[in-house]
Image 1 (cartoon, rainbow, N blue to C red):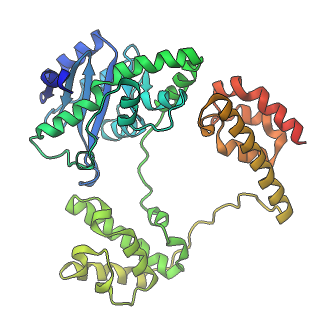
Image 2: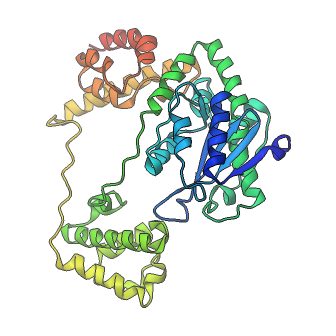
Image 3: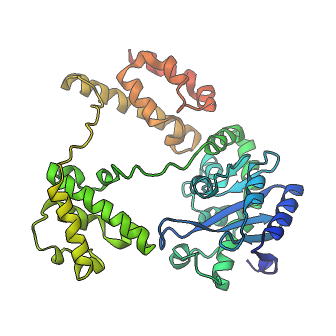
Length: 382
C-alpha cells in the first residue's frame, strides 16, 4: 500500500474526529472497517475504526477519543454511502458498543457474491478485481488491538482494509449493472443495516456447548454451574471464555464430576491450586443444586409418520434441485437465490406458496426474478 503510506492518520481527539466527519460528509462515499479485541479480551470492545475518504485513511482510536458521537452521526447519515467488506460483524459491533446505526451501506462481499465470485475474503476480492495483494497474516488478524501504541505493521494492516474499498465498489457496481443485479445487492445491503446485536442468554448459554445434550439432568446442572463460573472468571481476568477453560473440558467434568478433576486437559490454571479449589466449589454447587431439564425442541415435522417425513424429504431434495439449476443458469451460489427455511416449509406444504412469497425471509428481488418459476415448479409437483 505504498501509494497511501503518507495518508494514514491516527485520530485520538474528539475535535479532530469532528473535522474528519465533516470532511467525510462533504465528500462521500466513505469506506469503513473496525478492529476488535475479542480474541484476547472479554467482554470484547471496538478498539479501532478505520475510515477511508478519497485516498486518505483515518484510524479513529475509541480508546482515546472520549466522545465518538460524531462517528455515529456520519454512520447514520443516509446521504453518505458506507462501503464495508463483510459488514455483519461491523454492524453488530457498532450497535453493541455505542448503539450506532449504519445507513446507506454497500457491502463489497455481498456484491462479489452476486457477480459470481466463489471466494469472498477481502484479500481474494482485492486480488481478483484490482490485482492488489494485501497482507493478511493470521498474526495480524488475531492481534490484540487494545495495545498502544500500535505497531507500524498493525497501522498498515488496518489501513489496507479500507484503502481499496471504493475502487473495488466501483468495479463491482459496473459488473452488477451489466448483469442487472445491482438492485438485488442494494436490497441485501439494506437488510443488513437492520441487523442488531443481541446479547447471549447467559441463563441457557451452556446448552449451546457441543456435547451438552448427551448429559443427564445432574450433568446439566454441573455444566450450568461451570459455565457461570467460567463467565465470571472471564470477566474478572479480561480473557475470552475459551481461553479460561475449553468447552470440551467443561463437558468432560460435567459428565463425570467425581473424577480426578486435575487430570482433565484444557483447564489451564484451574487444574492447579488455588484455581482448582474455586473450580471444585463450582462443581459442588452443580451437584448440590436442582437438576436441569433442557427446553424441549419442537419436532420439525410435527406428528407426521415415517412415510410422510420421507415424502417431505423427497420434495425438499427436488426443490433444492430446482434452486441448484437456477444457480447454475446464473453462475451463482444457489443459496443466494432462495432461503432454505422457505424451501423446507414448502416441502411440507406446497400449497403455502402465497404465504411464502410474503415471508420476511424472502426478498423482493427473489419474488420478482424467481417467483413465477418456483410457482410453476411447485404446481408440477402436485
